[in-house]
Length: 381
Image (cartoon, rainbow, N blue to C red; front, side, top):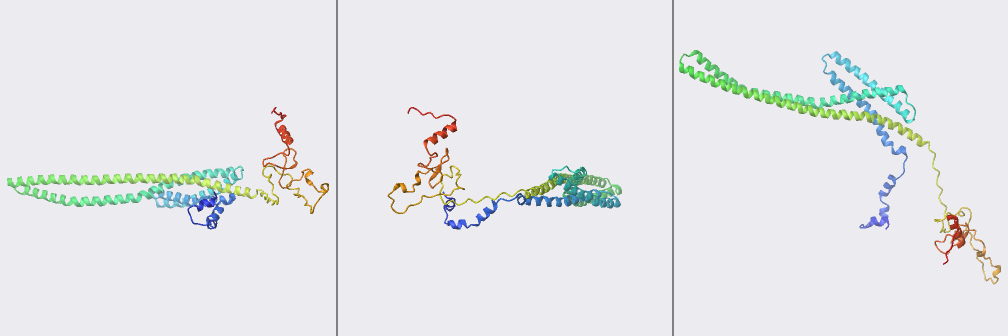
């Protein structure tokens, strides 16, 4: 079944509408053969710009990590000196790494031996950049993910402590006043029953004060325990995020080297592709006016050198058959319409059946004997 008939099944669209659809232009464009230079160009541009961008990213992330470390120092002069030297040193490292990568991977693409000095510079700068980037990424992410939360936890704890102190301070002050009053009664009165009442009140206030202080202490311990748990949970999340950032920047460092390698491999491949010899143009097949039924079966050696000949038609009545130009008795050395070439003797003949390959039975037997290298023996039948 025709492909377009399959598409049209169940629809009312005309075949011409389907042929004019834009999808055929898109399909032709997508399936059009392209050179390596055009096929790999998007990946080449991505690799090139990633390497350039990652030099800046690596520089700044290492600088941030060093600044966070320097902020822990007490001396302001030491901070200024270390940060200034870091600006200069990290820039030199990234420039040296980029230059060494260009030189080494260019030599690799040309299949030449790399310069030993540049190879050593590439190894040293890559290792240094790898260590500083991974460490700085870990420290920066940990600081960014925990510092604010730690401050919030401290603020929350201070506010809760203030609330607890305000809540219990009134009760404590009241009980302390009661105790002072009972102590005054005991010290100023000599009456036994007043002294007994004051003593009982003093003991009762003392017990209540002890209870209030215990509850206050338990509340403060609970706040401290919550703060510790919050600190541990926040620190654990910060460590996980820091480790993820460290692994990510480690992969970035490896990917940076791969991008440098691919950029120069792309250059080398494009250079080789540009110097490839052009493919010879295929000759367009000449249109044959005669139909050759044997062209799909046996190559025709006469198709490019001989022109088809036709029997000359004789006008009028011919009574003398000897004078007739009868070409049927001539040897069939030229391929006419409806003729074939014998596979054995290579002479032209007029075939009688559609699968005939030989001009006669003798040629067919002779061809079989040559092919099998033995003589054909006929049976008694």
